[in-house]
Length: 365
Image 1 (cartoon, one colour):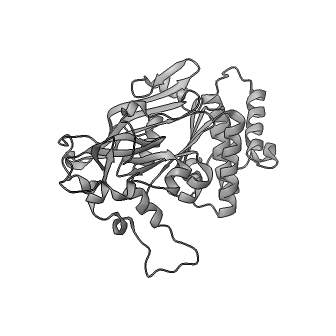
Image 2 (cartoon, helix red, strand yellow):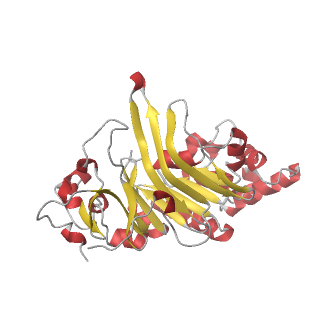
Image 3 (cartoon, one colour):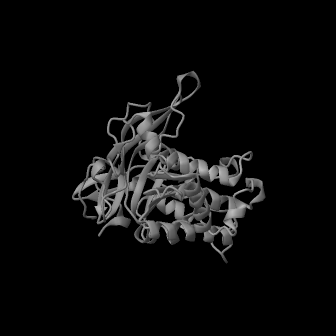
């Protein structure tokens, strides 16, 4: 039996100083053609604190990027709808509720308090503007010090590029994005994000399409800047190697929910949820040949294996297979994150124990 105590989603803790970002019970639905609605994010809850890196990991389509973009209200709200939840960002003026804030307040948070690095730098940078013009625009629009002079802005631009390791930054201000390599363009994106000294950096697949050497340098740079600036990092990735090496805590996402969360070493060394175990088994192993690569669907198995006992109560670790697909609003009981060990959380549903059924033998203490 696993000891633990139920907690409301809004109380899900991470140890340390006051959170920079608190997301509680966030649900996002997209409206499609013919009135069809797709729930992309379901009841997501997490916190990020200064100098901490929280990774959201999962396969493509699990809701990681939608969750990240929701923090800054970057979704097209003509089709996206926030069904519920709360996104709270700590600012010098107090805590801002991003879902209830007016457009002016949201703009004051973007860049200055929370900055974001997007997946593909070539599509995020304007090919018709020089790098200097784009960095200057970020500083002018989002810097907390609105009294910067033209000389001050130029000095801030040069400093931003120099901090991310771009040589001869003063000369490179006049260059266009196509004159930079992929790794250097990503450095420019990081420079723009960090130029206003944000409290939280959201890095959405920051090393996509980069070679391994450049990838390591970019990740080292993000970690270095986080330590120097007491900055929190929300890292969105599908790369478990990056998670193991760079994150402090991890939330594993599957079909829009965080199904397991906890310290990285604990989750990767001793995964509890069947999906987390399946995800880890899908990694190719050097030196071991297989007829075919194992997929998540191959390894999830019988839904009854999701049973677990917490404080004497029978639970089922939430999986799409443990609950029949039902129209939105018809689910009788919503899954919830519950602490099952110190710092370890699972998405669970209460169930009636089957006669003679032993609750999750693999997870008995």
